[in-house]
Length: 115
Length: 112
Image (tube, rainbow over all chains, first blue to last red; front, side):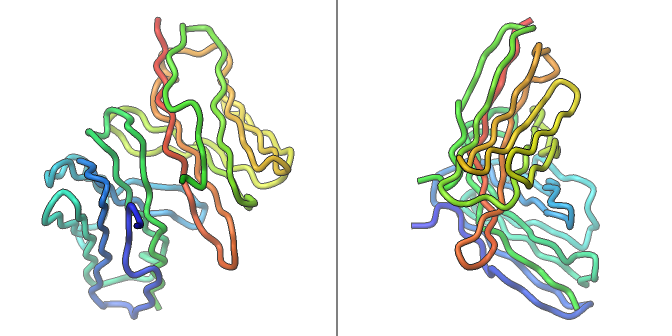
């Protein structure tokens, strides 16, 4: 069973569209994250949820909205997609809150291409 | 099992001591990245290694990629409390298509 699963793996869409990326973890972890990997392979945190509560909200356009229906799921919804949104998005989870390290588990990434 | 094994999982050292964190892959690496997370913050990019034998330094942190062993080591010289945090390795590998994989992280505490 995949511990952290992201869907879809690939997403090609036109500018202006609204899309969602889903993430689910079956590890019983308390904290989930969304990271964006830019063209230089830098991982930048976007959001973090601990037990469904938003605890890290970095400066990202408000077109990006995370939604956590329960602690096993953290979805990322993007409105009015722009060319610059093209990137690989990673979901991750960990036990406890981000101030400790109980081990990260990453999803395999979603490659978003906006045309 | 983890495709990228990181060791140790946690490390406590006295200030001034040297330390090494290892990252080992079961697959051929096409790029290896080291990140650091300070408590309560996101991951900060430290350095990227691409060629076998490549070594890079950032202040007192040195990372080396041993492509033959599919391993990278991160070495901190004369550790300071500011080095405390979580160190994470990430890599690009391929088995048909490029794939991104990550270690589980190493928590470092530096005692003053």
